Length: 219
Image (cartoon, rainbow, N blue to C red):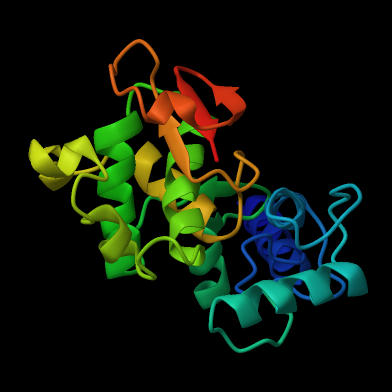
């Protein structure tokens, strides 16, 4: 009995002295799966180059700080709860799971657009649809807000048929967040269409830059 208690105490002491995987903050010196997954996001969004090696060094710190500045967060170069939420990840002690949480009204509306327009597409195709909306926001030829672009007269059929009001699934929510965080699989396209699902002659005059799933993306 005493031996079992002693082993239990030793195990508890070892656990207390072992670095906790579920760290509340990732910072310079951190290592592991959480760091790797965060780095993959940063590389995907263009904040850093190279490989995701799971080591939080100065290069990762600078990339995180750049992400934070773009997203209106305190640019301390550390990944705490607020930054993790903005990135759409959950610090999980070895792995980072994609979040399906809505972080803003713009994110909610963009998620609904993605779900209505692209729920049958691949994940990359869903991100691409969201990116087109954001590219329009950045273009002088379109309204300069997400709601303005989405509700522009005749812009999206899902607005006129009411599908924009459907509740988005977790994939659409994550895809919208990835686009908001800078991933643009279209390379700057302003239009997309399914050639099998439209008889609009004008849209076919646009220059197609890439095809993702059932959609052609054009400028």
